[in-house]
Length: 622
Ligand code: GLU
Image (cartoon, rainbow, N blue to C red; front, side, top):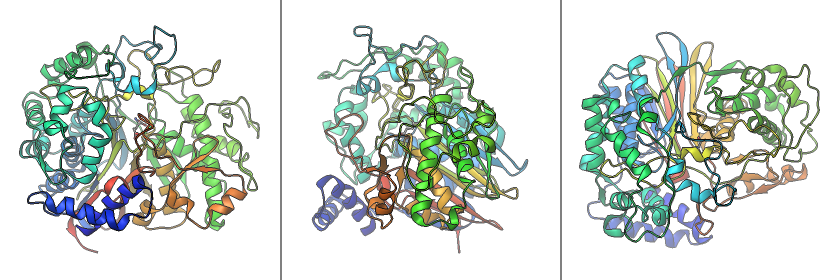
């Protein structure tokens, strides 16, 4: 409990600007003790080691749901569905059936890694002008686009769950929805993180009667320790369990989704005039979540698998690893190690922004981007004595040798502190491993809860570029009917000699890519334990003039050396939706699994970022 109070204190001290930890600790203790019957969350551990199966996720109820399914003999797919469905209840601002994501799965029977693409999809009626204001001919302001029906894509999570169970599950969807359904019906204790996320969204949530009714009881922020129920969501899960996923993809829930997008459930006192969207029941009915091959690169004897387009995660983490394969990082000083890490992602993001989009709509040169040859071509641009100046130009993956040439300038990726997604990992007793990142995009998604159904709709379509990133240069990520917006989600599974040894992924918008890469490098090159790799201070260079850094990163002794090489850093702590709202200046929210062989495993969640996550194993041990 004390650790939890101090985590809460740390979050608040980010906002209160230093020196008040003691006071905040005391206040937090009072708040927590005042909540009637508040019990310390069971199993609120960031690290758990043992056998028989393992789970790491954002919340205690979700991790417990996954462990319960594993104990009953469920597979990693069964448990991943149970965890994700329970997150839809206890972590609804970053998860749920209103969103989408990518599942990467190691199937111990076939010894193969597969992926499911459950990314949200633009309605058939969408055009490249989706986010262009007809009145001005200019892109809508980002916050206007986010809180609107226009930004809502066809949700993909529920079909992902169905696909995973069809291929790898032992239980029915109804069974795996059970823990989430029960939690929604009986309620869960509001955590400091949950309350804080409602606070950050209070203005938006108050615009919609359905959303304020769910998350602002009697118009107030929910009290920490109070019990929040969501009977509408319990009924939605029950209906889906009984009728199948068609209830959403064309059925009764789908009709309510479409209605909410077209006729926004505005509150009586709403001050915003959000734009309705174009989603139709036919869009929902034609949605698919295909099983696809993963991306693959070899890095220092490890096989690294992740998700290709529509995500840019697998290609950008993979290209960065290929670039870094050209250097003996373990022998470098810490300054040079980090300098190379930052330069590799600076270059790889230039290529991501220029070439990666939904491969069903644009020609993504995935094989070329992931080739060792292209990695060498990009690596030769790294100068150990000086940082490149961003925005750097993309390389030419189609060229022969390519050479060390920078071509046209390129767009920088915006620096935003984002933690608006969740990553969960599961291993089962059979040897299967699930690595699953899913999201509703912004924290709180579009802020539109479907009336009577208990879940928020995503705003995933704002992951499209609203207009060409660089005028005159083809942009692979413009909106189009039926297209999936480019993602940064990077659910990853790492094999060594054919055996899974690591699963990792993260939340955090475009910082997901650098977070996953940094954890891989810390683990593989620096031989850190997985808990140490997750806890390590982070920095994120995405081809922008400054590198986003956590304050703890800047406090390290190596920072001065990096600055001498021309690396520039900035801390980012304002909400992308409202510059008046200060949020914790952290980067990424990760979770992972270390698989030691012989059935021994370690589940690892964030120790402090976003309030800390929850790790558990079926049978604790060393
Ligand atoms: N929508 C983002 C993506 O797909 C993830 C959202 C976030 O983590 O902020 O890359």
